[in-house]
Image 1 (cartoon, rainbow over the protein chains, first blue to last red):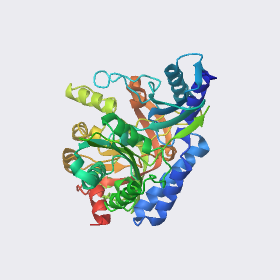
Image 2: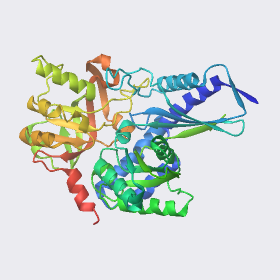
Image 3: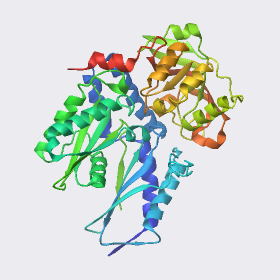
Image 4: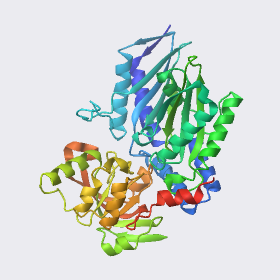
Length: 281
Length: 183
């Protein structure tokens, strides 16, 4: 057994909240640079260039890339040989979020009572925490702040198994087309197929943690990712919806075995500020 | 086409704006998003005075980050405009001339834009750090209890936006998509 003090988790979460909001991952930056070269719309090229300029300003001045610094979504992998000491794990994570959003001058975007008072909780807590127990004695923390604009354009469908690949494609294309300019394109489309209602949405979100350009290891799934990306970029929505070839930078699909009666499909849309940082304790 | 436009807007300046124009705005604009719009609409419905005269003014749909020491304002990019559709026609009837946000508007908003000779601009969603650099002064003038959602009076210089819906009702989101769609 290895002892880990939860204060260490608090400190790590605080750091990851700040770093994820200031520094865009390199793979996303590279995808945007490649998109400029391919983009045919002159206005679209200008927009992509401003988006790149923006992340450079954020990096240099250590300020948030986007003012919507999101809800703090945390994927925690906890080694089963770790013994946590010093307090409650979830409280320690929330304390890290509280410190990170305050000390990093990040916007507090969480409201209580979602359909009654909608009062700001004042410190961006509670975090959205997904914990998985794994082998070993390490603690891995992935922090992925998620903004409201792109999250609001996400969708879920309980498709019939007979709807097949055609049904999946139609649902994805319709969802992206309907979202249009709202989720700040170019977007990354995270898709979960299979599992139960909560599992499919969770794997859709997890697929967004992948590096842009990396594909599912199953070649059939990877093929569908490529095909959907191609189809989405034929829609013409373009950077910020002003028209162009760059509507999506990537389509990421994760799958999970499903019930004999079900084929749930979840689409989690991510804007171009595809933020996530990780650390291992 | 690139244009430099001063705020407050005028009928003449609105008339020269066409969907797809890149525009640099300089002058005073006001911030306001969900909660502030609800309060403005309630004040109008009760016949009470608004915290600012909105005639010919422009509202920017934004909830900025807190300013770091030495900053005028924290990162300040646009939020999705559609949530303000319920209130925008009422504000335009009371003189509002410009809106800055991002994303689709409904038919009532487009009709009001045409009727009131107004304009809908988009700023780049997700470019909060870049856009904050064009804000030279920021002061909360109403609803401080709403924090990030309070109404700020901003003085901007060359604030970069794109005309999405012009006063004739042309919509860049439709025109741009049609132009680049591959069937």
